[in-house]
Image (cartoon, rainbow, N blue to C red; front, side, top):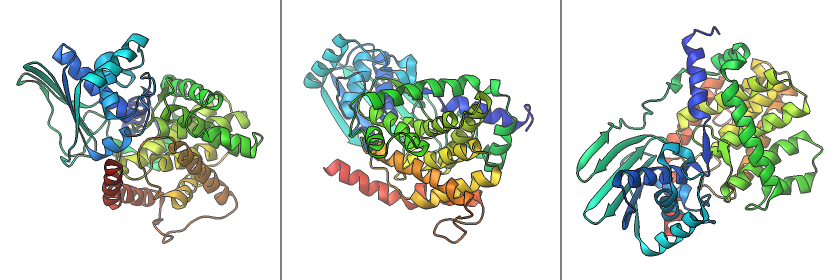
Length: 426
């Protein structure tokens, strides 16, 4: 692929758009971002807060610890963090810098402020509306379709920003339909590494740091440490799973380190990078090979998520685990056939794993998804694979990825609704 080709330029830009830093689970952080922006527009700390959120947002904010809040959980905590300590210009790092005094003020704010939460269904999977009131004045901010996409700002009946929302399209982002496995393979083999160096090196640095912290500390169910304690650290397969899980252990349970996300998710960003990095170390891959493997894994994950959507009942770790398998296959000397069969095999093994919100058990799901990616590659090495007609597997990698998108977005829609009902009624 030539550097001036449309797809080449698009793929570089997609990596830049998707591989961005986020402090904490991205859904509560998006909520904190909306609240911080609304507070900025209001120009004062409000005495009343209303949060309207789609079901998938409620599901993903309910049980996860919001960083830099002294282990507060839930929608009111995320809103309070954004209002009291948020810096809206930092977007998904909106609450990266919080003082002890601000944490104390958050608690006081939660205790003394009326905060209401409403489930809204405007036909959009990803939607957050934050309305703040102070006396007779109010402000309102709406985010739709992806984490930083503010589409409406209003103050005291004056509309300051209004961008039409056309269903669930991601206006303002590079066209993800340009992604396909053959072109991704061509891109990662021909890309000038300097064109992706900054974005990939940042992913290596950030995600390695949080995996290290997850293994050092005591976070959630400590899945990463459990894997190493149970199976030892001599097998690269175990280490690959453990490090991805450890990053999630830390991130889901209040660690105050940022991660580089993928397709809007830190868990997915860690899942498609940390196992690949562990194999690169084991195989003593040089920097060039490692960066190409990571570009492959990241783009394959984004490609799968394009059809599924950013939030659904389909666990995003499954897509990222299959993508990690692709990166590992490349590092191990695999060609295009090895890569695509790894992805198909991995998807056949664990597709259908449900997303029941962000919380400690995400780490265990990540470990299983990475395991499926590694197994998918080792199956193909030994002449074994799943064939068209084996369940949702169909002829060709693109057709199978299409089926996965259909399963996640359409087939599991009712599943998502039932999960949300269970979580709200709890």
